[in-house]
Amino acid sequence: MILELKCKKSLEETSVPTDLEGEVEARVKLEEVGKYRYIIELPEELVGGDLLLPSVYYAVGSLLEHLPLICEVKSVEFPLDRVRPPIPGKSGLKKYLGLRGPGVAASVGKNIVLHPLSHARLFREMCKAGLHVGFDPLNLMDKEASPYLDRAHQIVEITDRIKEEKGRRVLYFMRLPTSSEDLERAISLGMRGFYVHLCWDLGRLELAIEFLDDIFLAARGVNCLIREVGLGIKATYELLRVSGFDLIERPVAWKREDLGIVMELDEIIGGGKDAAMPLTAPQVHQGIAIANVPEDLQVILNGDLGIYDHPRGILAGVRSMREVLDSFMRGENLLSVIRRDRDVEAIVEKWGYLLP
Image (cartoon, rainbow, N blue to C red):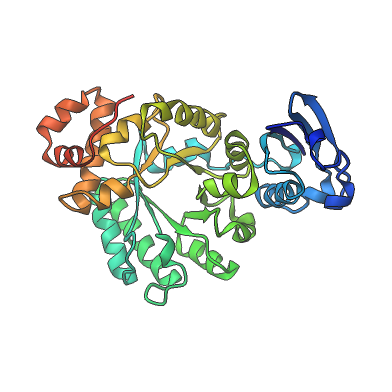
């Protein structure tokens, strides 16, 4: 595996040796290829492991421990035999959900712990209001009040009922569990979606390796890789894309100057026939939804902020988010939607709106 480093100054001005063999217990050498730019080839014994993401995470972390905090990994050339594109992928996810445009996602319960039956009923009401994708809140893991497998059982029943009542599929992502037994049992119950929060769950990813062909996998908390390891944005998203994730979280455009970054990331995440689909961080509200929908509509908007903080309640938040996206697909001007829809008007009055 080959890394390209971009540093703020020459490493010759530091105490870092060009031969790092003694530092990271492997034959690793820096090769300068431009001004403050270096190429490093990591040997197989340092990368190791079965899954590419944990291997790269720990290898790069080990390497950058011995480099000054002035370098960032700008790009990575992955070994071809370790690349694993998403099996369902973007096209498979859209086909499963029947999406022809952007979808709406949200945590279910957000900061509260509900009994599994109440949790599933809330998910059902949110889906009836227009939700496509639901997520376990982080605080549900290992909560006695909401046992993991009980919640899975109730959620599967609700997704089946939505299919019967509404004629459309919805998808629920549970947080990846701590044991392979729980994961296998949840899949046997009919669960199709699981997510990995990269701040805390990276070690659990090994549990999913034998099931990756049968489930949808989402990556959340992507900033942890960027902050903690020193991977650049492009390298981080490319790593996640080739590691088998169907959904990859990316930031929200809050200002016009953010749009260029979001559009670039969408190209990185969405490049290729079977590549992953972008998922916004859970901060989108109706006022900025338009700014976060790429031209090809290949995105799922995670609307926790706009849905749970809507002045008229959760279901009005879901419905108004869906209305904004539908009007966008019809080519309707956002201002006209504000004038005719009270729920959209209420949320825009609260937060304002941002157009590209």
